[in-house]
Length: 88
Image 1 (cartoon, rainbow, N blue to C red):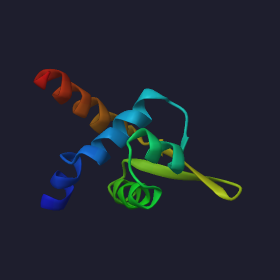
Image 2 (image 1 turned 90 degrees about the vertical axis):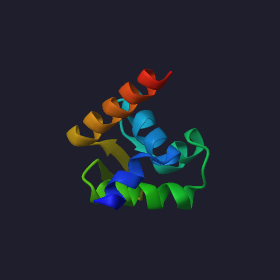
Image 3 (image 1 turned 45 degrees about the vertical axis):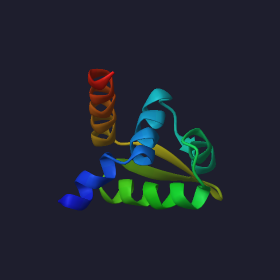
């Protein structure tokens, strides 16, 4: 349980979920990494953790993978935004 809790209260995973929420279409991992200012390899590790938790899914398009939020991922992203607004 602690691992699941820790992932959401780190800056990069939270920013990734919110970034995916802001644009409803699927995104490339490299673009997402640039948006949250981290390396592609770090982004992939975070995204794999989010996938294991059922928050994102990967869709293969040829040789590339697109990332989309699941319904559960959208709920978590909304909650992160609400917390951010509450603290602002």
